[in-house]
Image 1 (cartoon, rainbow, N blue to C red):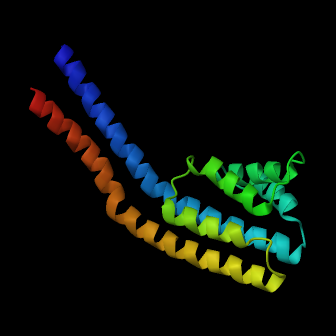
Image 2: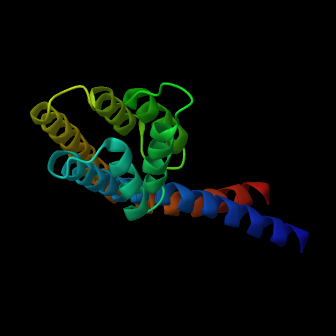
Image 3: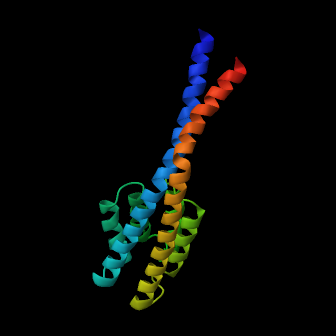
Length: 173
């Protein structure tokens, strides 16, 4: 009886691990799509609404789903801090670091966002628009790659989790 319970626990835990990994594959394209949409909204707020980044970030934090809303919420809070001289670039970087662990996004996307944040607020409106378009193009490429990886590996991760559990149970018997 204890062996059966142990075998069920092993299979359940490896299957859960496989489901977690497959969820990462499905969440990444979705979060990239949301990130692209957020940057497009940021562009509209800054370029056409002439809204300061702090206000735009505050608005976006209320409009976007989690975890992306957390980034813009942290950015708005960082930019509102008056105790220390906070630059837009340092607030962007700190907010990105604080929220990144809660996403399914990878290093490439993080680097794109770092580079975009480093240029934000340093140029005239036409160059700002070019920088946003460049970041959007890079994120679109990453989204296409994420969709390809999802179609290749999502089902495999689920199956491998279950099969790994069965293999471990068979080896232990």
